[in-house]
Length: 185
Image (cartoon, rainbow, N blue to C red; front, side, top):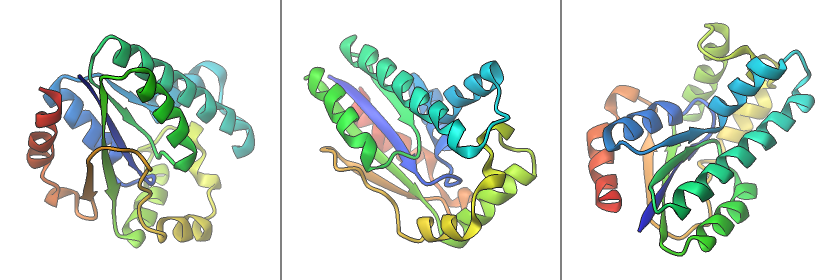
C-alpha cells in the first residue's frame, strides 16, 4: 500500500518546512507547488500581473498530480505540499481511485490569523520568498479575511493531523513524523 501525505494550509503556515522535514526523515519524495512554480518563474519569467501568473499555479498542480499518479502506480509513498483548496479534491480523489492500494493522510497546518498575515507579508519584504510569487500584490484585508476562516480541510478519506504553527518552536516534528511512520512502513 502506498501513502499520499498531503501537507496543506494557508500561505505562511509552515507547510514547506514541515513537508521537507517529513520527506528527509522518512525518505519520501516531496513535490511542492511553489517549488515547481519557482522553476517556471526562472525559466519563463515572472514580470506579469497576478492574473497572468495564475497559469503557473495551474501548471504546477498538473505536474504535481502527474508525479502523484506515477508514484502511486509504482506503489511508492509521496508527499504533496500546497495551499490546497476544495477545487483540488476531485483531482486528488481521481488519482487515488485509479491507484486502489493507496491511502491519504492530510496534515493541515494553521496558525493564529494575525501571525499568518504578519509572516506572509514579512517573508516577501525580507527576501525569503521568490519574487515571482508577487505576494507584494496581495490585498492585506482580503488575505486577513481568508485566513480568519479557519483551516481548509479537504473532503478526503483518511486521517487528518492538525498542526498549529503559531509558535514554530512548539511544533513537535518528532511526534508528527512518528505518527506518520505507521502509515508509511
